[in-house]
Amino acid sequence: MVAYFQLQPAESDLQHLAEEYWQNSGRKEQELERAAFEAGESIRNGDYSLANLEAVVRWKSERVVHYLIANSTEKIRRALAVAASPNSTTEAAVKALLELHGVDIPVASAILATIFPERYTVLDFHALEALGHARHDVHFYEEYLAFCRRLAESNVVQPQRELPGPTPLRALDRALSEWSRSHVEQLETHA
Image (cartoon, rainbow, N blue to C red; front, side, top):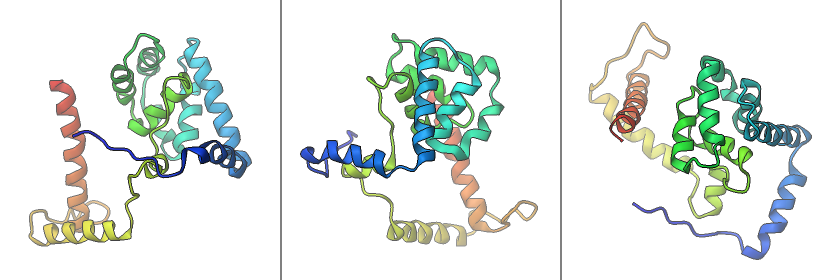
């Protein structure tokens, strides 16, 4: 399957939109972005520290920063060294970053964009929407929820009474999440 992108705003509006984005950003967002790109430059120059990684991740997704401490200093160093190598392919750089706990493809893209802003951009649902990929709306969620409810009501999973949210729906959510995680790991193992 090949992704299809169709620019939604007029090309002539893009520069204005970029300037408007920065003007409409709050001071905190501007400071986080500045710090992230300073950290990216430090990574590009060989400083593969948790502090630099944290500055970038905080800019992209502050809610996942706490996951970074689960990575060893050596694991961070190895991943950032691959990401910062001018000889790494996009695939190799992203895969190295995905090895880090707390890093998914959008976060990996943000890390790469700060290290090599001339080569990479951030994968972001807002940007995708501007390229013709509609955001998942309430109707999508309702359809998803109805499907999951039907599946849970068919007794394919049982409540996990000793865990938080002891319902079949929560058990199904755990099962689907685990399948996705392990499926990705299997694909990476066989790649």
